Length: 199
Image (tube, rainbow, N blue to C red; front, side, top):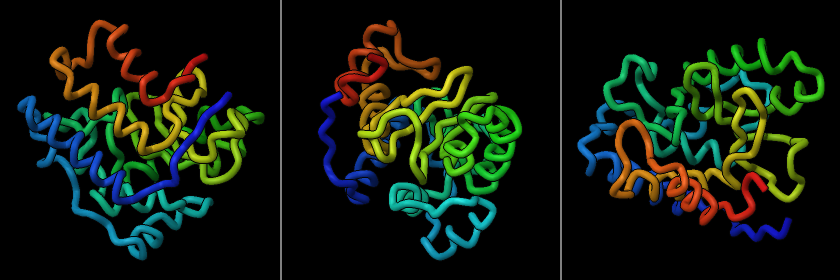
């Protein structure tokens, strides 16, 4: 797989997170009101002492932007979605991590990978996680966003690619709170930012 990625940029991630937020707001979805304040790195690492891995720059930068979604998805009128999973607060990430490890984490071939994967988003028994150590899915992609739901697959090359993809989905004229349809339009945008995904 011939994949060329640029070096991670916190500034680029924050710019695209703001773009995604503005896209939601432009559709009348008040996601700003559901988000917690940013978390400084030192505080973040203290609050994530339950996680066995070392938080990489991608996760630190995400929570330096906002502290996740204040309420559970079911309790939020306008969740901050990354496609079909919503942005986890640190408290919710801890809960979701334990839930993931008690289910998918019991399968031995995936145990170590999931043990050191941080859930940044979740919904209804599914998770988007970022591996903080080596993973067994694609050696070219160091920090992909991995979907854990029924199967375990790479959904986005990086967190930056995830946010860029989500922003373009939400900006599309066809987007509604139910998602982007037809699915062919969603997939076209998905592969624009993650060209060899699912191939």
